[in-house]
Image (tube, rainbow, N blue to C red):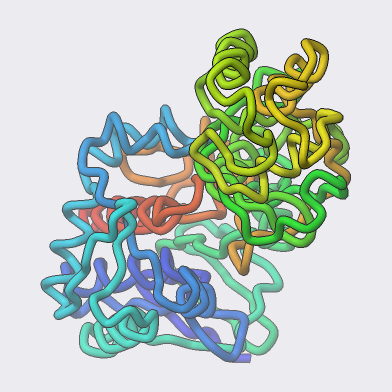
Length: 407
């Protein structure tokens, strides 16, 4: 087996890996850079992300605001985002002939609405700058010698002075990095939806409402659109809660009580006051007929029934206990969560290389010289909306800049 030598090797042919390799090769022509990818295809996750449109970044341009979208990595990313933020991402892609657009919720996509645009951009830029992309290279071992890295794959041996690990959430690779002296924070899923079987939502698939959600017994809460699905609950509010509660909910084995406030900010007492007013003003009208609140009628009918109020009952006939029960259903409804489901194809993991062991000015390991990290291999994750990709671009850019500075 021959030794193939490169100045820089990037392990992982995903978003972070390509971004790092391209930035090194473009800044330092003549430097030999290779990407090693274990699969037959590169950029697989980029291709399926954002429903096949690729949510490249988010239109949040202030580093101090941007870091708030990261349950893990908030503190560490402040410096990096001051160096390379969403605006820099837009500029980078514009220089590579890819125009991005901002959607109403701040998410940013290529104007083509096609992730293939991003894949093609990376493959073209890699080729143009002389990055060698080698597929079918499953890492077997990484060994630090006196002045080089020896990387053994399923079919080859590679030597390099600088090694960038951008392999994402790969347990086998994490074990190799642990072998180099790093701490690995055990991985748990981060973005997921809740499995709930409950008669109140049984036939409401597709119904959505602005709600605030809490986990009973924990200091975990979030708000945003909540979507009822055939397996339970999803939507931005639920996904935020799952991201911030990733570790605590894993510890509970995804069995917990979810508290839902369908009126978002309104508390039970205020709600009860509003219901009493409705009882006075609409005495002769049927309670279940039309939702007096800003959410769908089907949901209102279901919550009215759950409060022991029959569909044709008039407001005048509703007693104090039923009003109290309805106020609780509206502002503090309890649902038993029994398990989780993956959100679309967004496999996001909390866990990875311990952040204290990485220099966030350069993305270099504090433990092993000339070893760099970018992307989800680190214990960094974000909520959905383009933030996980922004972490990949920023980390890749900083690692590239640090490596280029050594030549």
